[in-house]
Image (cartoon, rainbow, N blue to C red; front, side):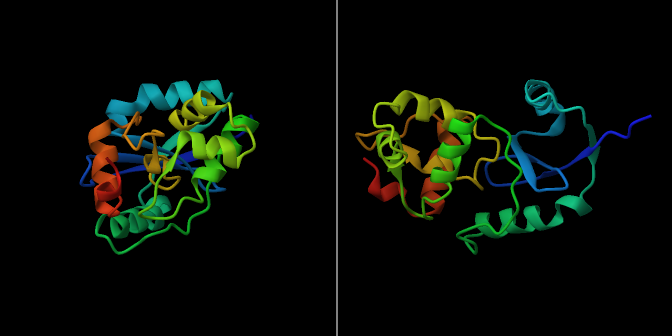
Length: 176
């Protein structure tokens, strides 16, 4: 009998609601907006799409450091994360997520800016699609990506959460 690998998960309360965080032995692999009960179907779909035959195990100890860093972020005490990430996505998605990860706290970039930075200036919609599939929001700060005209557009967790995060970081005044 082959032993299946684990994805450890834990929930945490935050100012934008409950977050469910998942971690493999290599790093954080997902953050979902909502409790495990509310997000289990999303997580199951994500696992099946990536052909991952794993066992989900609740284990707060395994997620203690990510939760601590997220709590510091929400208190305004942390501007970047020092956590290993275990990303699962296409080559293009990973390219976009790594570029988004480089957007500094309190700053924003447009989808067009990201497209130009990765050398695909016409891929603005594809950038939006990749950003929407970001498995670790907040840590990979997809909330910092806005429309070319400066408007807040699209966010998997809802625009209210995007606005909260940008306001927390002091970037909201820069947005029209």
